[in-house]
Image (cartoon, rainbow, N blue to C red; front, side, top):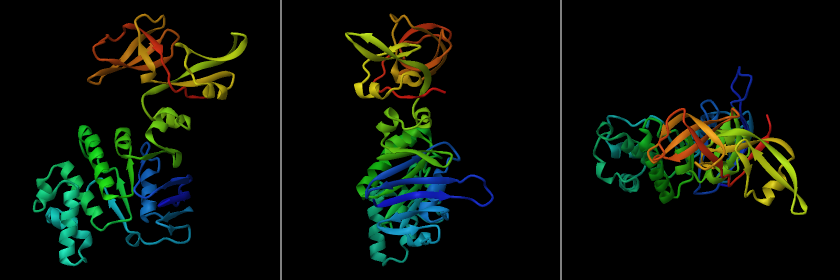
Length: 357
């Protein structure tokens, strides 16, 4: 691993609980990792620990084969060859773009410094604004200048702390895709912090979901969505609800077979491996909005209690006659009114269950 965190802990004086507790994960060279979770979950504290700005209370951090942090020893931030991009960009208003980008390599020979500034500005697509000042640029351009400045010294690792939080929602995801392309073109290894799932999915090779100082899962976006390791990850990623279900044994075709029965009816097409792992009795099954299909012919009816227009679709919140609530993505030409009853059915490709609460 290029970046390797083992059983990391950060404890602030006077606090009963650790800000970060027993966190382990790694990044290979050139990989982009993302830490995501609600406010106060410890993701920024973890990023600061990697930068050398927080002391460890447990564990160690290894970067490029060298141990940079332990409980008793910590290499200074400036000696780690780590670049940082912050929420507020921290550009100097009295310096032009080229001077801002070159600030961290002021001690390089002038010719090399000028060449490197031009190289990273071209990399972020801003080669033509070198003589402009920060106030003359858009928010997205300022963010790319900050990224270019962080890349200029050729850091071993790039750390990005919610760099798009001050931008419009529509711009965030597009810029996340752009930044991913820039980082890949630069061959950079990066660790990124955000609370926005779309940003995380757009930029990350691997994503860590944090809650209350612990890392619940470290995996790619597909695995987080379809195979969440904990109830918190299942609840945090995507739109979905937990519904009570029964795992039952039925005698049929000369044998005994498991069935999963929910308030929406039985779930079909469950893989044998998943069925085998299910315990008989009551479970909570995760039903995401894309697992629920609008079907007027279905005997299961649900009442629309909330609707959110998403352009090409509605996100309906639906209440069953039995009282359970589910969510469904429905094409926007099915514009039903609040209070209306519609037919729905489950089509669950990846069955995710947890012990019943």
